[in-house]
Each structure stands twice: as structure tokens, then as C-alpha cells.
Image 1: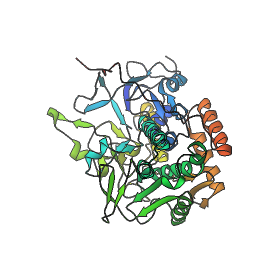
Image 2: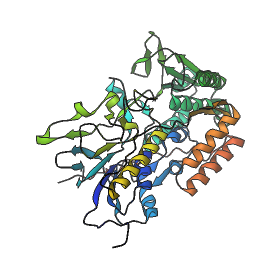
Image 3: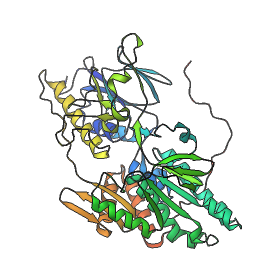
Image 4: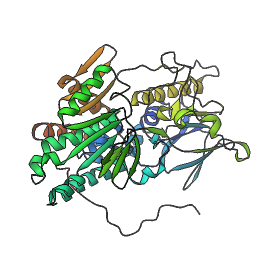
Length: 447
């Protein structure tokens, strides 16, 4: 047997739930000669969530920000790394099994990296009526319906009916909400007069609603103020310090009692952990013991789930409290946290595979800053060394996002789209392609 390669009979089996930033960076840094590794994801691709809003606003094609997981695994050149597509339904910690809709997988070590989903804050009825941006499919649906509204409005001759069709509301003033509102604002200011000349510009309204007293609450005051100024320059109405209480029959009711017409509501107001059933001995539900705020798995400094053996949680779905002195209430739900945790856990497991007394490192987040874009030449960047805004910040934002996308083809496609759109605000992506209804599709089902 070659030196450094573990006997196949002794290799432990690692199962990774989720092919996002945490899961993929774990795979890049784990020593695959020492483990058998299976990654499970409901999609067969890795996607880049920071650019979902550009898909939703017809700025990028979905394929430009998605990368096939099987191709990425092929680059590892290891036969003992496999991919299984499936939605995880249950984790049985007593038997060390995970159950999907089509199979049962055994694990010795489990990594939960499945990210978050939309949080509707005790308004579950919103799931069927609002547009969300937590997946490529959701962003694509949002894009189609924005274009559908514009096409219908362009042939509406009644001005009042046209105005009702063109009321867009974005709920949530974080980076995604600000970026989405800015993208629609750019369509209103620059695209609509050229491509939809039959629609008076003033008939389209874009409103962003934020319960906090400022936008981009996790960023600096300077970034918040600049984002507010930039959104107003794009003719976006900003409502701060109010929450949405109800959305019904095309009307939004706010906490201050005001009511707004709304034909299309985009929800970016909050996230919560993906709902996974976790059981122990005799099928006991363990969720209440292991889940913390926002349905995030409570982990220690090594990213191990507190109270469970050989189970780790990484990225947005985990919360590490009272461990990192700089983040006693847990780390922000950002891509950089997930990336760094994936690398740390891989490093610790590599050490554990070669030593009975490994030197394990606890997680310490290296905050590299945060950023958001509001439109062309409009962005804000907060770094440890200072703050940037305007054109320079916008180019920094573009560069960081471009190098973070997987695949050279995807990088080039995105760059070409951005350059083309920069000079003429034109794109071939404003195509309205509806899926056909038949044949009725039957999902996989276990016997």
C-alpha cells in the first residue's frame, strides 16, 4: 500500500448534505485518500446566491451562475467521492443514517451544509403569494413574471390599470433587497423608455420596505446612507421603520396602517434553517435540543453539533455562540463564514486521520468585509481598513464576485454580459419563456 493512502477497509464514510460554499470548500480541502465521501444535494449543481438578483432582473442567464457538481467532483480525480441527488428528509443519529426521498445512506461522519430557506415570520400564507430569491428556480420565476408584467402593461390602454400592474414592492432592506430594488430601478430609469415606450416612466413604482431605521443594517452607517441616496437616484421609494403586516388581494398593509397596491412582491426579509427531522434513540425528536435561533444548529468551536457524535454543521445553517470573542452571538450568515468553516473542518479531519492525538483548531472568523451593489457605478464596500462607495466600490464588487464564480466559462460569460450591459443597457436575456404544462411530471418516489 502506498504511503499516505488509508486502507480502503479502514476508511470512514463522510456524507455531506449540501453542495454550497461550505460543502464544496470542504471537498476541495479534505484528503480524499483517507475517506469515502458522498455529497447529497437536491440539485445537481452548485449555484452562486449573491447573483440571484441578477437572474431575477434579467441581467444574467441562470447557467452563468451555476456549475455542475459532477464536473467539479470529476476534477478531484478520486473514485471514492460520489454525488447523489436527493432531498434529505430525516437524519437518524442512532443508526447513523440519512433518509432522502429515494434512498438511505449510512455515515460515519456527517456534515450538514444545506443552508437556509425563506423566513416568513409567522405568515406561512406568503409562501404561495410572494416571490423569493433563495434558489435559481425562484430567481428565474421572478424574472419571468417581471417581464410578463411589463409585456401586459405595454398593451394596456387604461392608465389606472397600467399603474396597478406596475407596482413592485421589495420587502427587506438587506443586501439582496437593496440589490433587487436597485436592479428594478435601473430597468425603470434606463431600459423601459427604450424597450417599452408605451409605458410612461412614472407609471412604474418600486418601493422597498425595511423594518429597521436604515438600509443594510449589518453594514456601516456610511454604506446605509449611500445606499439610500443611490436608490432614490434610481427613483425607488424607500420606506424605513415599518414592517409588512399582510399581503392580500394585491395590497400590502404596513405596520403604520398604510396600504399600498402591489402587483408583484419580492420577499427578502429573512432566512431560517432548512427544516430537517432529526431523531435519536427510539425515534426521539432531537430538534428542540440541537437547534438554536433561526433553526440554526448549535455547534462548538470545532463546528461539531452540540449533543451529537460525529455530526458537524457549517455555514448559514449553524450558529456558534460564546466561542469566538468577536462574535459571541454567532457569525453572520455570509459566504466567507461557510468557506472558512469548510476549510477548517477538512483540515481537522485530515489531522484526525493520521494521528490518534491530532491538534485540532477552533474556528476563528477572518472578516474580510462586506459589500452590496445598487446598480451600475453604484456600490458600497466595508473593509477593515475603511469604506468605499461609488465607481471604485462597484469595480471591487464586480471583481470579487467574478473570481468567486466556479468555472472559467462561467466567469467569461458573466464578464461579457456585464461589459455589454455597461455600455448599452441591452441584453438578450429578457426572453419570456414559460414552461409547458404537459406531460405531468411525477417525481421519484420510494416504494
